[in-house]
Image (cartoon, rainbow, N blue to C red; front, side, top):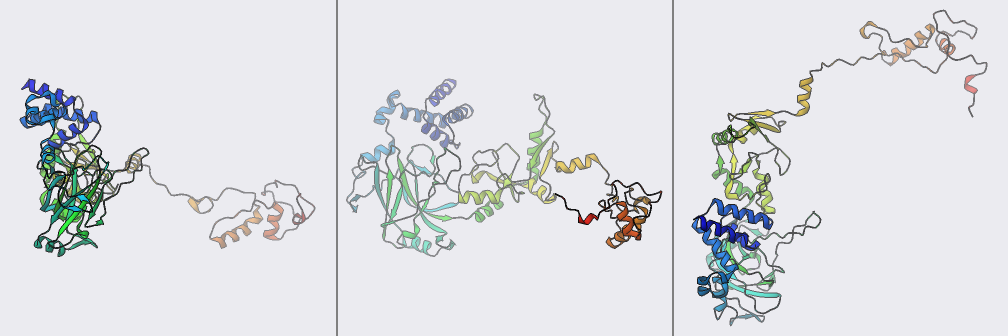
Length: 493
């Protein structure tokens, strides 16, 4: 077994990117990332899950990559050509037929039996109208046209015609066209060929466009969804013809037609609430296992902080959801996650960027209780070793409580009655206090001092004294000299 393991790891190191993706997809692993990430992921997979099925897949991929390395494979399958391709190409009707439409030969209805399409959360397959069939190039041109033909039964046509509408022009029961890579191993995701165009009964139908990219240097990406061809079909027992225009650049593709029921994000959320809710007790056990003391670790973990803010929309979580296979305790909002994948299906965990398929989603029962018990101002909590939790308050509030600074009232020094003290002395004379006091009384009790007036003017304004009147001993000396002219008639240059 050890020798087979070493041999399998050496084979994996010689794989191409497409081979690595095929191997990882066949074992239910993510096939996204750079080649070095794929190689490391595949090597860890071989080391941890060295099963006969995995070793068989590795050997098949290696032998298809290097056909001369195995004599028995070359004897059964000359030149390392896959079974699906050889069976179609050897068939006399695999490339041409007697049924022509505008000079385009009819595509053979021979299915690619080994091609399996991945199940989609928002689509429930009711019936298969056309099994996955490979698109065969008719010549050496880069742009190819391939045609497939299928018919609806009367019950299927009635089922589509009488179905409800999710929104205007979009029925709940649809006939969809799916395209994927033609690989012999693993479940295939939807993948469009380059320069794709779909014509149904002589009318071009809508194919999803590209997502714009905001990052410089990153090419826009096209969402490869099933193509809804229902509006252009003949809802009767008549024959429907679909012509697919595709770019022939070395990749092999298969096309399939299915009768499906389309779910909305609200319906999918109802299924999630009904089928996948983890109890609060089980969540506490997971927290205790995660915080259990590890004697090999030098640092003991006494708690784990978890945010109550959804990383998707930066708002407080409504329904806490996470992926069972993820190691973190952080949750995200289930409703927003399903709505975003309904518009742009990525099915990626917003916390750790790992694959988050709908089948692995679960609602956290403990986090649901915490969200109900805490105030909306609480944005973070901490899980403790015994499975309990405590809220983490805002840093500003904690600083305020730590300082314990008493709040004193602000004193208005212009009010004479405050604390029994009078305001500070000013240049106002004793005779001017009565006039200032009367002015302050009319204004609400404050003392108004006009510092632009001389002591004489202040005295004259208060008691009507003449210029010859001498200042009292209690009055301070004037800061400015006396002027013989009228102050109001002076012009400054």
